[in-house]
Structure formats: structure tokens, C-alpha cells
Image 1 (cartoon, one colour):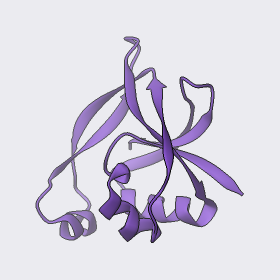
Image 2 (tube, rainbow, N blue to C red):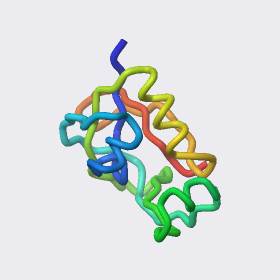
Image 3 (cartoon, rainbow, N blue to C red):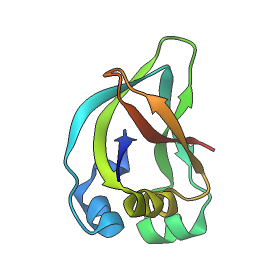
Image 4 (cartoon, rainbow, N blue to C red):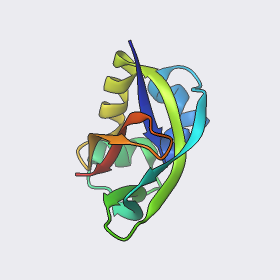
Length: 111
């Protein structure tokens, strides 16, 4: 079963993809409507230890201002979605959304 995952941040980075999924993902540009991007101070000690220097990461939150967030939608497996859950940690939660293209996808938002 193939699933769609929308990324607006670190899951677009090749190094993160290799460490999380063991492969490089191919994706297509898309847009998340009705959300805005902020910076989130990370509190998960495992993520801080794994990344070292970064203390803040991009996160999206719902917005009623007609905001939109550009990103990439990837096709992944159920096992890869579970790996992404583990990577994102407790500061993010996964929700289902409809993208500008009309495609349904998972995205990680502020927990």
C-alpha cells in the first residue's frame, strides 16, 4: 500500500531521508492550504541528541487567514510512515489533509 506524505521541512533533506527511510524519496511540489509555518522549539531529548545543533524546527499550524505552505508530497510505505512518526517525535502529530492539488496526504503539525 502506498501512502502520501507532505513535507515542508527536514524530511525533504537527503540525509534525513537516508537516515529515516534508508532511501531517497521522489516527490512532487504541492501546497498545504489553510496552514501557516512557524518555528517550534524542540523538547524531545532524543531528537536534540540526534541532530545536535538545531533547537528549533519548522512546524505548521492551522490558520484561518488563507495562508498556505509550499512543500513536496512523497509516496511512502506504511513502514516508512511509521519511521517518519518515530523521527518526528512527540512535538509533532500526524494529521490527514487535502492538498491544493486535491490529493490527500499525511502531514506533521504542531502537537
